[in-house]
Image 1 (cartoon, protein in one colour):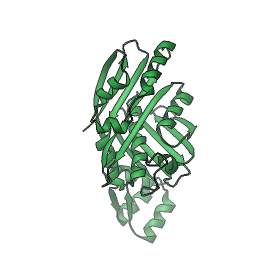
Image 2 (cartoon, helix red, strand yellow):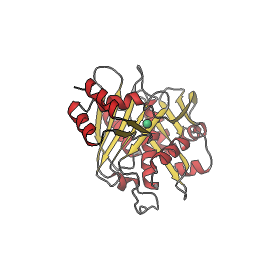
Image 3 (cartoon, rainbow, N blue to C red):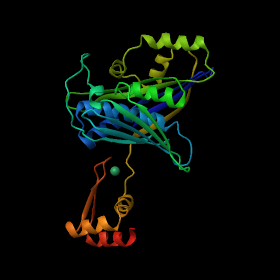
Image 4 (cartoon, rainbow, N blue to C red):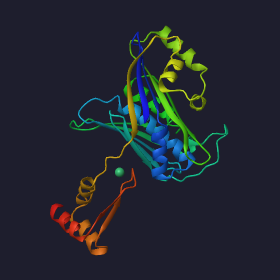
Length: 291
Ligand SMILES: [Zn+2]
C-alpha cells in the first residue's frame, strides 16, 4: 500500500504533504497501458490529486484535476477524495515522444498549452471550479501556479514518476509545501535556501526515501511535527448502477436508437477498464425510466 504523510512546522508557518505513489501509478499504468511519457504525466497529476484530495473537508467531497492541453496526450484527469483514493485517465495513453533536452520524458510537450481545471465537489449547491492557464505542462509548476493564483497560497510542488525500461513504475511520489499567511520573511528565505539545492525526486526514489524522510530532508533546520499518515491507492468506484444512470441520462431517443441498432450496450469504465453489458431487456427498462 502507498502512503501519504502530513506535517506542519511547529511555528505553524508551513504545511507539508508528501506521498509515495509508486503502486498507485503502477496500477494506472496497467489499467491504461500507459506509454512512459503518459505514465509520467498522469502519474504526476494523480500524485498531486491524491495529496490535494486529503485537503478537502465536507461530506464525501471529491476533487477533480483536469488538464486540457493541445499536446498529443489530449485531456487527462484525476479524481480523488479525502480518504486517499485516486483514479485517473488520459485521452491518448500511448503517446510516444523523444526525450527533452535534459534527457527526461517530455511531459510538457505531451501536455501542451491550455488550461488546468480544479473542481471541488463538496456536495453543496454548486461545485467550486477554478481554471488557470497551463504554465509549462510539467504538472508540478501548473499546480503551484494554481495554488498561487486561485487560492493565494504560495506553494512548492514537487512531483515525479520514474518509469523502468519494462514500462513498470520504479518510483513515484511528490510533495507540496504550503506557505501559511502568518509566515515571516526570515522563515520564507530559510525555506528557499534549504530547497534551493535539493536533490531531484528521482534521486530520492533511488535512495528509497520514505515520505517522512522526504519531509525531514526538505524541511532541514525546521521543527517539524508529523500530523497524520494515511494509506492511499488507486481506487475506482464504478458500478452497474452508476453505468445504468449514465445510460438513462442519454435520454429516450438515444437509447431507442441503440436498442434498434445493436440491441445491446457495452460501456467500458474509462478509469479502470471494467466492462458493463446491458441487453435488450435492460435497454427497454432504461427507456421507460429516461426522459
Ligand atoms: Zn471503474
